[in-house]
Length: 454
Image (tube, rainbow, N blue to C red; front, side, top):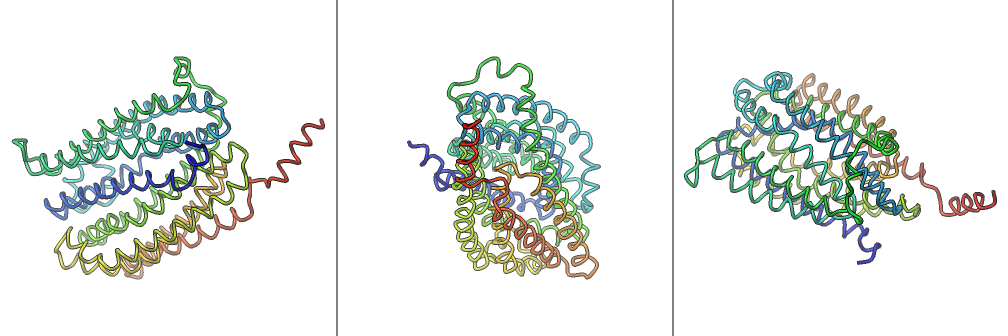
């Protein structure tokens, strides 16, 4: 297969889309199966996952920067450096994952209290969070290995692994929630056990694929110590991205807490809508992720014009898919919500959000297409600063003002998110349009000629 085809947007994007679709479907089935226990159980899982996302910022710092460095090194033909970066990533995630596992296990109740978990939800959430959180090391290593594999240009491997993980998770969910096949009926604790076992299996296979991801393969020297030059590169790119990710996760956790303070029905509605709206979001995200990998490789190869065009290709392709899926959800959303709950109060809150989602998701796509491309060329400080400012001053602050102070409820939360995505999308689009770190081909030729004349 030619390198050009291997780095085409479609070739990279469709396995990511399938992988994320499978995760979405499994998340939806997961929520559906848990909702048969109770709406409180669904809220408990949703609230716990917000905590897990918020505490994962440390390994995001490592993985986000490492993925871009690996893509750039592969594009430049520096396979040895890409391989050593991968080894550094795995070792660092091992340490960080162990620390986070202990922290979440011993502080689950406090974390849920901070999230304003309703009284009916708290004991269920504590059961789920303490067990799944204690195994954050598994999540950390699995996330790292998948990110490394994906940024080498192999997006099919993680897709196939997710397929297997979902099959295991689905079977174990059925067995341990409902007590099938002679196994105990554990309810929400069964969901947490199923989650940990399926992710552990996925980690094992990811490590096998990772071992074969580079040519030439890993050497013993790759695992000894830390190459400080590569660590500095990862840190330079990764710390703004981690702060950006942390800002998003913490602002979302705060927004979730605001929704939780509105009552159990509002929290259940928000949880179900987050599940349903994941479909258009994941389509757009898969295109943006593929573009980031492609731009990283092209930037490493000094192919700046192709870098520049790639972001716009991702934008128009992603917008088409996102708009279609958002409109479909609007049409069938009431039926989809009916799969999760028959509570009239929950449905009354959630149904109007389906139309609002048609506006929100395309705005997210604009932001993703350009922000991911900026990150791929190392312009991570700009995206971090602009995102943090908008997330807190617009998304979080306006959510409180619209949703709680003015009493608009979840509609107010969505209005704030639309404002946030609009502002961030405009800022990153203008930044990319000005080319920033990207030189034109004539600039590159002039620079080479100047160096040769010296």
